[in-house]
Amino acid sequence: MTKSKDSPPDRLSTNPSSPYFDQPLLERGIGIRFKGVERRDVEEYSISEGWVRVALGKKVDRHGNPLTLKLTGPVEAWFESGGDEDEDSED
Image 1 (tube, one colour):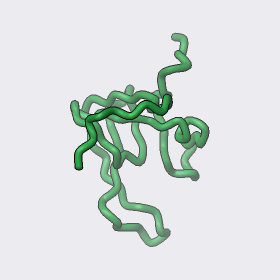
Image 2 (image 1 turned 90 degrees about the horizontal axis):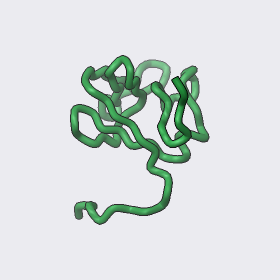
Image 3 (image 1 turned 120 degrees about the vertical axis):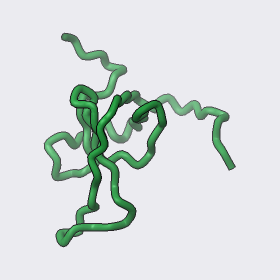
Image 4 (image 1 turned 60 degrees about the vertical axis):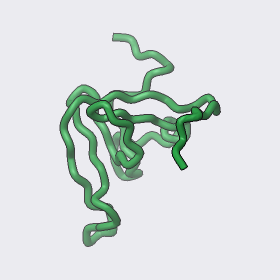
């Protein structure tokens, strides 16, 4: 299976201590659609396993890491690089 340059990896995390953290990819911007809804609060995702991790508000554990909740369902990911913004923004 060949990996396209325009498709994000199967699994990616925003936590620098995770083995799935990749700063250059995160700088490009990753869009996530979970169960048909675009989400901006995803900490980590796995397309093949069908889950996302989202932060539980501003709560943190005793080490200062955000508490997360694992949600299962269909996950889609794409790169948001390109600079063109949609006119769908809500005020």
